[in-house]
Amino acid sequence: MEYTFHITSISSELITKTIHIVFSLDVDEETINGDNIYLMSKSPRAIVPCSFNVDGRNVDMILDNSPSVNTEYNLVVEPNCVLSITEDKLGSLIPYTIIFKSQILDKIQIMSPANYEEADKDMKITWKDEDASPLGTYRLQIATDNMFNNIVFNEFTDHTNEMPEDSVFEMTPGKNFSPRQYFFRVRAESKTDFGQWSPVQTFVIPTEKTVVPNPQPEEKPRPDLPEIKDYTEVEQDKSDKTDTAMSIVSTPERTNINDEVPTSFHIDFTKAVKLDNISVTIKKKVI
Image (cartoon, rainbow, N blue to C red; front, side, top):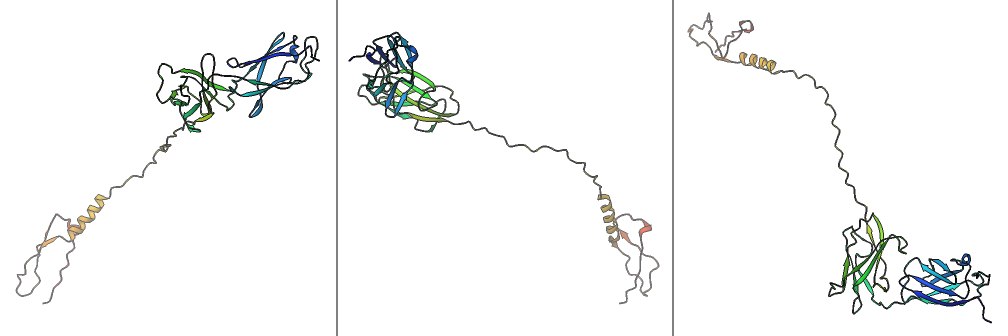
């Protein structure tokens, strides 16, 4: 027996990331949600995030992110959970196989930067299109997570006017990325179709190193130095006295033939002396 309330057709559209579901009756919009209808990826097995748009008998499932092309998904409808506006229940269904088909088969190999390489805002991302006839138009995405839920760069680039002979293409994001880890991927893309994403790779924008100058010692006021006394004059006086006492340059000749003590002496000094400081002792030397 055929249910009066059933699904009449299911189709998928790659560019709009949409699955179109047509029912035999207008559906109750409150029963169309992610608990009752959902899309499962096979590897890894996980529910694909999406939103819904309901218009009478037509329901569109719009994926949050681009699907993998030419890859099988399972569309699951929980039995007796989806209702029509006349409260007919949608019975048990075998999961539908969904494939987002693409005519672009170009395989992309990331060349640089290497995984976990430190990069800067002037970095170039390069990739090689391994197809025999490279498409020449590509999309580069950069995100802060490997699921690409938070995309910070999403740009299309056209190289058809200047195709490199080695099929190695490049793009400079030119964005001032804040320091952290980023994930990126590239795919061939046209205005009506796109190919499979390259394997995801990652790069790191390092934290800028702050150069701390060596602290200069604080200049402290110098304490008052004690007064320096000039002892040169005192030393000079001592020197003068010493020199005066030892500076006899001539004495009287011995002229007394009778060996008598002379009654006077003549002594020459090198400089003037004070008479108060002179003491003369005469000793007789017996020969």
